Amino acid sequence: MVRGVLALAVGVWLAIGAVGGPQVYGQQAGKSKAVPPTVDLAKPVTQKEVAATFEKLETAVQRVVLKGDRPPAKRPASQQPASRSEIVREMFRLYRMSEPKFRFTPKKQPFEKSDLSIAASDGARPMLEKLIEWGFVGRVAPLATSDKPTMQLPEFADAVSLFLARIAELTHTPSSNWSPYMNWHKDNP
Image (cartoon, rainbow, N blue to C red; front, side):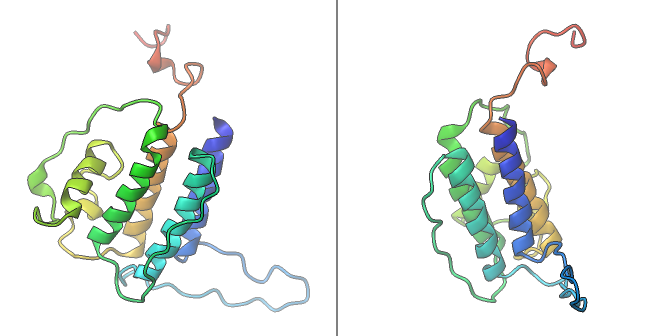
């Protein structure tokens, strides 16, 4: 279990690195230190960045959760800003891929449907509602409630990390040794 969670954590680290995360520069002896590239955090995340991130996430889910090695799906990779609906669709696809391996069903998270800013006529709306109910997306997170059609890099990174943490949580059987609230425990009345 711990090995699987660690592998998913590495997957998150790699996924965030795909869209401009921390990198090490100038580590070879005798080489001058390279200047790290600057990332404008105010710009929206592009389809290329989203595609690179979800390819790495899909690879991690395939290897760790599904115990397979199927190549990830090909996605469009343009420099156009990615819409929140596109991001929700990608998350929902990975949710569906992981769903057969869920070990337990969590309590549904209550939320106000009127707070969601993706239009009810958009096909991604029911997907977003399901992801929020299951705790894969925050109830008032920018992915769900922002007035902007796109997301900035920090918002995207936050959404992806919450999503992958929830996959890790639901696909691994919790241990009563480390989760005393699961069973009766002297410290948990």
